[in-house]
Image 1 (cartoon, rainbow, N blue to C red):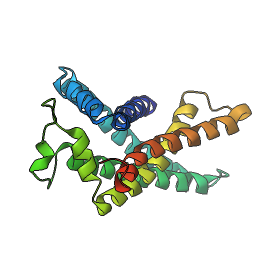
Image 2: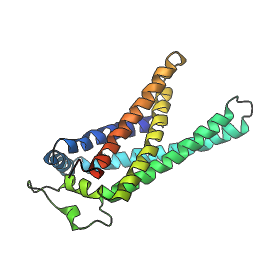
Image 3: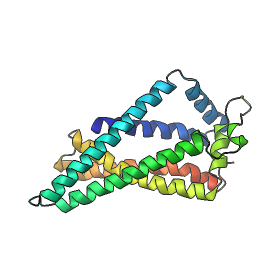
Image 4: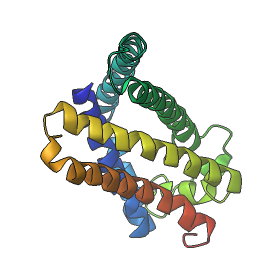
Length: 207
């Protein structure tokens, strides 16, 4: 669970860094996307990430079941109700992450329900990903849905980072407050980064 979480978290960070090139210039984002699409490592990387995502889901479901059993049966546990609440929260926020991933892939990668403009190219004759993103987020209900799901993703990330730190042995009581603050700050930073793109488009900052 910790290993798959680390890999997926690193992917989220890298994905955000690439997405933020939209604020540099349209050609920068388009060139970056073209480089990714032409890379011979694209499909091996996708398959690897699919494997880790599947592993994370399976391990998450397994741990959720085990935690629920321990919480309901272990009446001697002083904070069993907190564990039960945390378990349910992780499960539902994890489902929200999966739904968001499907929504995001369908919207900006597969172009479900998109017009012909989805496949336009720019002056460099590469796919105009910049135009694809801008036109996609100019639809208010798409943008608000994206932001809503990203807030849920942020909640999940906060618990994921805390769980990773604890599993990897860094969550010691002497600096519990500092690591908890780090978890919150990192999840807020990632969430704000992703949300900044649709918000900027919606308010006319990117066109």
